[in-house]
Length: 219
Image 1 (cartoon, one colour):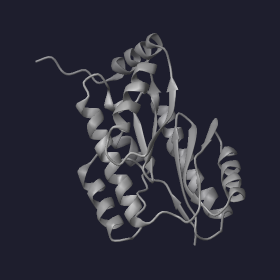
Image 2 (cartoon, one colour; image 1 turned 90 degrees about the vertical axis):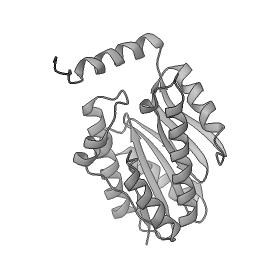
Image 3 (spheres, one colour; image 1 turned 120 degrees about the vertical axis):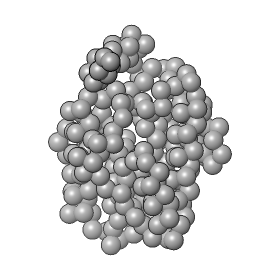
Image 4 (spheres, helix red, strand yellow; image 1 turned 180 degrees about the vertical axis):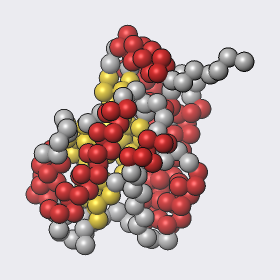
């Protein structure tokens, strides 16, 4: 039976711990978030609420399309959508299957770009997933510790020690995030999948986001 993964990055210790425990036991535990739950835990990452919803819809539709159209055994595919760019990671049996998966996801409504990083070979083990989960957590913690970087704007996806970084950022933020991630023990390689904008464009986006935040009541 094929395994189709949509792992949402929850910023809670409980969900992360549960994932690690299951993975260490050699069992695959897919964390699937509905739009309601994901919105409830979402933090500011410079996407609009509408785009966040579209990304979640793309991921859900991807899982549905893969389960219906890719019956081959021994594959494990994750689809991570950010600003309607779909990152494909995981493992497939051969190059033809990789192309079929990419083509299938590309035809999903609102997908504007496919970033195909699928590996050819046997699917990852539970221990590999566990290591990736821990590495992702360490990288996020390193981002939080860096005063010059807004950790919320960088999404981290790890596959077999290869770290994918997504987000709407400036060139300075992209370079800093990649440098930090590359220095975390366990990182084999960093792949920047950023949407880079100018400092002025980012300042304008941040201003709009900040203006939409609920204002604290005056005491």
